[in-house]
Length: 309
Image (tube, rainbow, N blue to C red; front, top):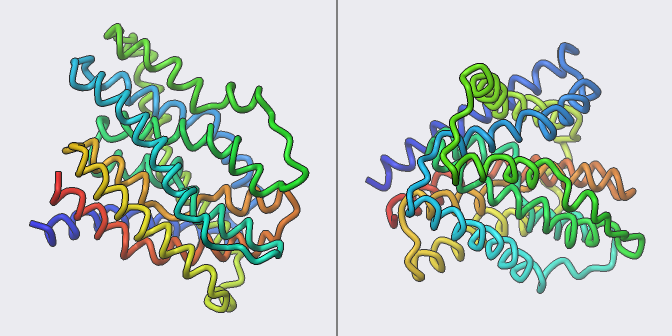
């Protein structure tokens, strides 16, 4: 059964990375550029991903079990990020401009572009329903801790962005629809569903364009990237699976927590590197190499969670 689970998870991961390859090739062929991708990122963040989250609420029945699991998942997703921060503390202490990039990459995963599509493919709406909390928590903690980590002494908290971000607003819209079992008219619900279906292909195509501009020849030289991969892809999900299983988390919720924990370093790694005048090349290389390793580690971790559910 374990290897059947590995095969199933591998299929979904390979499908997503084939989309990345398409984005890579299109960029090299000058049919899809990084400047175009930049505009599409805004569309993903402010339109497509919110539609994914709202649609997940629309497709769930407000049973007592689902309501309890939703709020439990929020606590678990928060705990996942705290565990990641704690695990990174003994490492990346060298005083150079690259260290914040590596530490950020070891903590913050590709929740929006990878975890949500993967949860949708493997678990369906219920998985997205739980992973929605991972996306909210990611947005909150990265604005409190992640930006401070990257900005250093230039850090300034933007409370408006913390509260009024796409993840939080989407849940504020979707949660009442779920709790009060409100069915939107088809003429409204279908466009939300169709826009949400763009999340995986657009996210992966955009990632492919960024990889196309990464110096892949030097990607294997920096040893600290391997430590990032070890912490993000193996140690963090293994600790979370073991701990959550120990406290009684089972089924779809356990797998959703595993997916959120085991996805590779997020695209925000190089986006924030650019914003806060760090080495964007190092950020891109880190995300690229960790993502490459994740093609092997994600199926194994997801299969382990499925075996223990």
